Image 1 (cartoon, chains in turn blue, orange):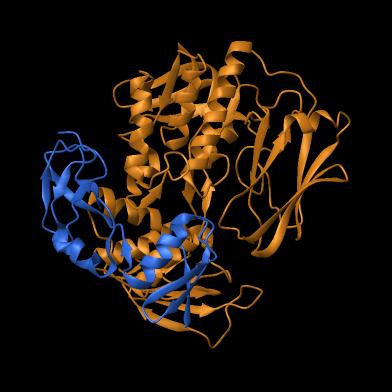
Image 2 (image 1 turned 180 degrees about the horizontal axis):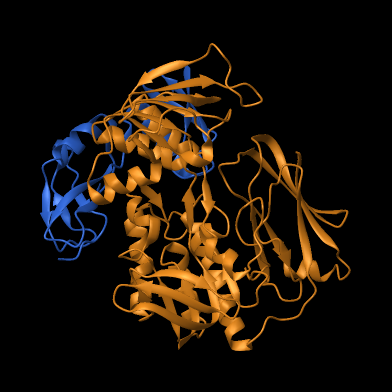
Length: 121
Length: 420
């Protein structure tokens, strides 16, 4: 049995978590104050994931940039690939919150969606 | 002179939530004045997620959170002016503002809500020695340049200060291809949220050096290198601990200061601790009918609390407008002692307050396994255990009106940190 100490990123509380593992199997999660902590801990020691937020360029809009994000969390080791895939992307205004900007980013099966709105100029 | 029942200075999260609450409490004539070209305030440049966990039970980005409130303002057809800078608020609540279309305008208000937000502590206020080249930005300026304007301020970065904006920008600059070499923090603890240490620094192997500060900036035209050194308990650099980092950019994330130039000229009394107005339970300042909420009142850790607080200010401003005056009532002072730096509000009126009142504050140091104790005069009323408290995170105590009614002769309330 080995233990790993984590800080939960589920909310601003930042609970100190202790995960007990038997090889690759999670035996116990301690220190969480809600269910989010348990889910986060189990994921973090097996397949850590993150929501990625960044920006892409907008053409013909009232603003030059728009906030975009992964619709759900993606594997942590795909973060840079995800951002790189968005480097050359320019979208046409108007853009509304939730519009799909890029499908299946970096082969994760997760779409990139607009997390802000830009009206046409 | 055009007249409104309520004028709200600032169209960020505080101003928006205050406007919605005032309208929902029966005030028709409302005007929001915003100096930027869009509503939403600082949220527009905060593209990271994590906003709205309390309010909407989901994690939104800054623009998404702002959009929810902007929508509510638009649904209610609340009037607002963009690109409009407020120059002055008089004692008589005449607001002087300026914009390109109308020039200088004078507006009479029955009540005013201050919601101007805060600004970042600048290099000038930090007394950092060295040259004054290009490449030194506040973290928030860099955030606006990257996220809203689409410019990269630099390629090799040192960050001073571990407040949340500094941590968020360490990740942001890294994702955009910059190399963030180190984050130095003067204090022995981080000023930011724990989750941001994990997901903004640890995820990208960016070192955080606690008890370190910048002792030299090199470069005549552009930053060439920054030297940091360890500081002792007196927060002075320890000779011989200097480390030099070659870089082209220095970001400063060294604290936020409520922006109260307008409040001062209006005659609003400010707290030397928060740099924000001193308010009572209705978030009213010493001037009748002038209320304050959000980061102009005290710097918040979460926008959800800003929205809540602004809702209270909006509701109370509505009540003031309907009554036409501030109720004359007995006032009890809240004394922050033993680790509690300040409280907002500072004064409460036991007969006028809501059934429950949230008193927010920050602690002055990191406290482990301690408790927040509340006293009515010398009597202990409540004691709540807290495993960890840190200056970067706000704490709260909830006061019950019914409980206060049992203490008609109460002189003051004391809130302090005690051993658990």
